[in-house]
Image 1 (tube, rainbow, N blue to C red):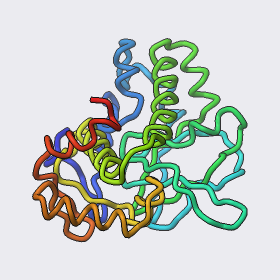
Image 2 (image 1 turned 180 degrees about the vertical axis):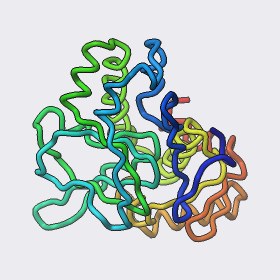
Image 3 (image 1 turned 30 degrees about the vertical axis):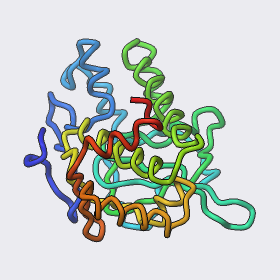
Length: 250
């Protein structure tokens, strides 16, 4: 499914629901199942595993730190922010999750969610019972590998921007990765809506909010980006890639 075919809920792209034989268009697990030779019609067990939940409105919590863990969830629509708070009540943003991405994987080890997850706009989820997903993965090696890959990606995203990079490099890498993640799911790679606030982006990148605003203004002045409130267009993808090169290593 491409950009013009996507449904929209309150201005937010949402996956096609599929049907009896086809997975949702942004299903986080369809590729692994299809690689094993199973389509949706052959996975009757999956009907028991999957529950469409939502909508969650902006500011609604999907789970909170310490809540018992028994399910992972794939985002069907909207953006989810994960964060923790320190002893002084200060928030630390851990990540942002787009349609087709999975939240809750970091709860597997302790059986409790180690962070909070909140909707940044209108969010729809597919919730998977993790015990039943683990059972299914035991019968499908490809699905098991896919779960491991998702865990690895989750760790990679958390550590990617931990190096000693400039503010320009950090923000460019963030935008390039956002562009790639949207493109992988059939959305536009150059036109996107930044559902996260500037303060959240700054928090995630460990930068001051005014620094993020200053870098965005400079990139606009140089003709690399066009930003209007939360709508952004990448006008010079190659220039942005070059700026992010050292962070992303290619």
